[in-house]
Length: 408
Image 1: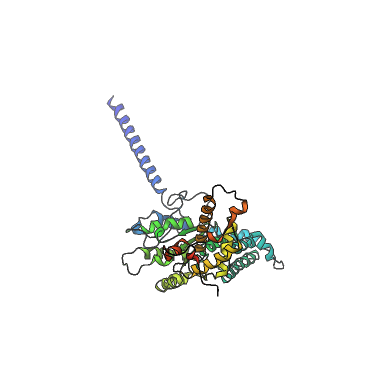
Image 2 (image 1 turned 90 degrees about the vertical axis):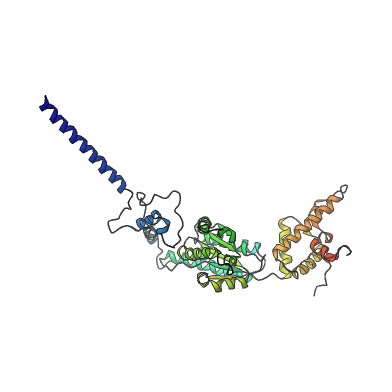
């Protein structure tokens, strides 16, 4: 009996040892599956990129990089059949090579403009913005450059991707934000930007309040802007030389890196007063060198401001009587000499007050029957600046707040 039991015990021990060894081997195999895959040539570029995301923050160094999308594979993993970085452009180039035009072919820029609806964008720009001829000429040049690049690509003629980072300078109310919206649309229609959305940001949207807060805050804004335009208004407020503990310089450092490394995905437009932007570029020369196009928005003259006011009234289904037109023109002239005048914004505010006075004038006479034209027509008594009237004092005669010297 003992002779039968001993061999049986020995077989059980052997089986247990074998099972434990297999389990341990499987566990090591599972752990190895999280290591970066190799392409057989010393490691793929995507593996190196994914390793960077797997490293702790302290091991990454000072470089700033945007986070991967939520649907991105885990570090080290790759999707079956997905091209590695560097392969994608090669695939597109091979596809273009198969569709290249012969050297004897011709192209028409009229067809190119119609296909991208360039004239529609530029026409909307003319409707939205009065004057600004030098700025509109610059926009037309940028559109022409991208159109010619598209035509060259059809023949296989390649050139470096043009830098489109810009700086808009000028006083408030001169159309900088409107121009940025149209520029984003134009660059999208011409294939320079993938999406063409405009993200408006100021200092408070980018600069954090404590250590470690600025980079994530800036990164979130940049991720929203990718594929479109990031418009930073009053960009000089990012830098505060008097405050050594200010975190604005961290934003500038991040922007410098992204503007250089992500030019194919993002256009940055800085905006503000011309003299302050010049000071900003003086203390941040790296930012100046990354801006390719400087567009200066000059203040509007009186005729342009009156035209802007008429456009605003047309959009709101109002109009000025002949007498009100003269009163409005005199009112705008007087406004232009006041501190804090903001061009089109001040005109809009004046017309909002005129609508308020018009409504009160009509509603005060409850028994009167008003026509459609009465509801649309503004009269001289409606063109009153409450702020100016108050500066005249309580003893001033009615309408003194809007009396101005005769036009020169």
